[in-house]
Image (cartoon, rainbow, N blue to C red; front, side, top):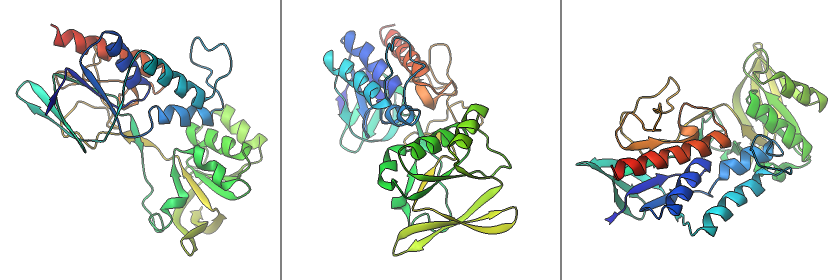
Length: 304
């Protein structure tokens, strides 16, 4: 079992920022990420076209470029990322054991920055056509240029994704279970401007196709059966905290997101959290600030 002071779980904006501060301090830490670092930063900002809410950006910058700038900064100061998956965290006396697919680490503090995972739509055909179902991933839209696709979920993220997918050349429909879209008015205007087909009061019942190739959605709209052509599905029906590896009982809000104090400490002593996994605003700018704060107080706790 390898020993270190701090284990940072997740290399999104919060995790990368915490690691940058740890690296500058030459602290004992390990940053673990199982996916592409800052992958959701890349996805979310790309679908919004450019980053406009991040201070210090003098020119328009895509999510891909902002992601790369985070990684370039971290690598420039000598930072490293362990590509691995955390399976379980447990307590041993006053320390923590972090078990991954390849390693085991013993540490004094944990900073959870593993973000969120999409909610799934468990209906008939969702497993058969899983390769054509994409969760918060408009990057995959390039596969469907010129083809019919459907965005399920009419909140802000779904509406923005629908606009983006339309603009790269997909034939987009957007489906919302409520009697009107739940997104901001400015996004509704963008959907109308693009003549994107909108289905409200619509409940998706099943995905259908031939030879494991999706070609339509079977749904009910105001108690009437309808069929919506779609060779690809983009799901935006919500997110939940990515905490599958953790069996600690944390204080959370109603949606299960971690409640933290002014030190970014969770209800479990010496376990800190930052970014989208917390109950705070889910933006890259707030994630960065919280990542720095979490590292500062984790380090302060270790050094008393």
